Image 1 (cartoon, rainbow, N blue to C red):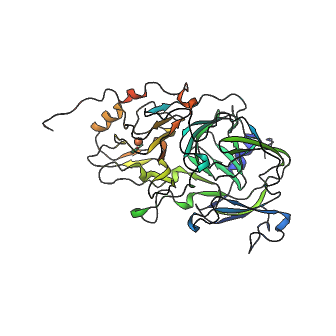
Image 2: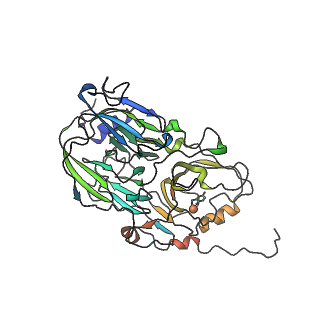
Image 3: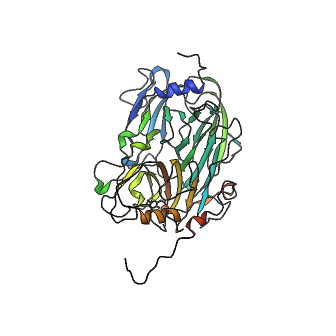
Length: 454
Ligand SMILES: O=C(O)Cc1cc(O)ccc1O
Ligand SMILES: [Fe+2]
């Protein structure tokens, strides 16, 4: 044992590395941190074990079909109801749908990474909304946020407006949630259900040489909770496998003393100072639970004959809408894979899409863009806006010798949504918005020959 302070980054990293998990997306999980804390045979005994309070947390209406029904039972030191009034606090750089500050823009937009945060910026203070769609109060649509933090949260956060898909790009995170702890490194994603309270701590202390700060992306999904996509003719296995999603085991925080709890509710941040930690759940069971998933576990499926398949083949999670096949948002990953298509233009094709595409880069490079699309940055190609390979990529891929090729130098992702994404004012005016993005498609030569002599 070293003499590190209990809440030092080093101590957190040791804790995170020793974590155990419960596998299986959508499972009916259960866990107890203290033997005997979880009641058996009923959810709500007259007196819950060990003097705990029983509480149900619902993520779906009570009456939704069983396949979509989500709830967990929490056995906690104090019920969540034991709190003082919430009062409004500054929303910082967090914005919420409906996004009315600016008009939706048909132009292709691309951003560099967020600038450095000022010292002492925690995950919530470092959360910066790029844009989104829908209406949080109608429980439809998404927000795209980025975060850039250099301090661990001391306060606790819960989002009443939607679930949070957290995509770290730089710096590992330790999520202390009501359900237990998750270690989330770049290349992993965490999914925190609507309303679940959690604290984000940094695994790498600024200045320890590992990572100067923690950076990443967040899809806040106001709509139907993310689920695994149907596999259709792919069969019973493939893409993201359910067993690779890991839920935490119960780990309670028994803290009597002031803890600030921030609740995002219909677009505003509200704060209350509790006289105890709300992360005091000693046992729980249910299916409304957080997960961590390692994107490198994604089973990439693609063409082994010809043509470039549509990127829906790379869907990790989907938030369905009332129209079959039309997602509120799909989360798609471009993971390392082989390209073997014969007589095929192998990178993403030129296209115009009724869906709107926000893309981010976790590591390396993306095969449609030779430069300018950088880790921590992002691009927005809204409904029907024309995009695809940049000039350099087009020229290279049109001339390439089509030997089998492994793409293993990058990890990119996309939030693809049925509604156009309106940028916030801060995103539309940001210094890190790239000027001249259109130029990547300038200079594409005319090659047309009315008589083909090839
Ligand atoms: O625009 C993009 O880079 C995303 C994308 C990738 C792909 O392989 C096919 C279509 C598509 O929109
Ligand atoms: Fe696209």
